Length: 315
Image (cartoon, rainbow, N blue to C red; front, side, top):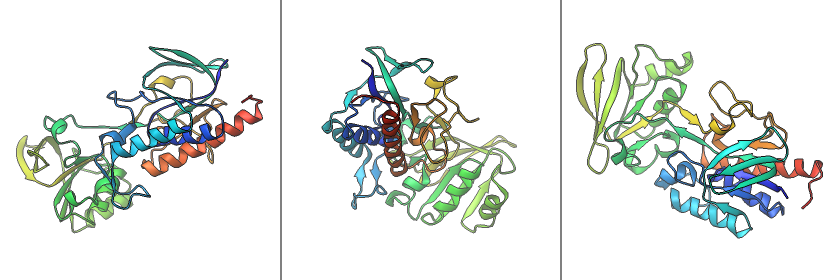
């Protein structure tokens, strides 16, 4: 017999979908191993202090929060497989989902595979990630480690402009490092950056390394027009160079936008394939927060439950 629903992804979206579908007696299966880097639990597993998730007034460590999500999923009977999904076949019903260890069929599928922040792969990056390096200013910019310090943002689009402006609330100064001589951001965002007294744009420049022992202390910059290099003291480095949605499994099977994000029907989590739903960062390029991912996981579960009921699935 096919499963009622299989969920791929173990971040806030996937586990919220599991909790809701389990409480709806759909007996969900969740593959939690799908990740870039092999760590179940999504991006919060590489995050230290989480201060903006409701219900934790003193903050909570990212891995601790995800362990609580996992325990709640299991409490309601979700079957958890810590395995990477290797193949998905949506061309026939029931759908097929396979890992190296098992192959399942399912009437419905919820995709919650998330997105991965692009990195610069600097020599000092592995040592200092989450010790002054972040890919989300809104998530981390207000942390005490960044307050009152000079901060560096890398990028040139709207995200870089927005994050630079946001960080001025906490930083003593913000340096926006861009490899070209003009920003790609929209005109209004460019004006906000260029007119802000706390923001300095470093044109035709790239970051070649991040320096510090236990926390970010400086970045090494290369000026592309002169090839000159220098060290810039700072207390934090923020990447605003985009995200890569984890959608390779579904290429050619589910509609995606030009950036590879899954396309959902406005006002729902339904994808181009009936019975397939998407939630979290795999379909959200705008908000990318744990709380919005969890909310969309709830939506996907409810959409899935209604779809199964309308199509006569037995429980």
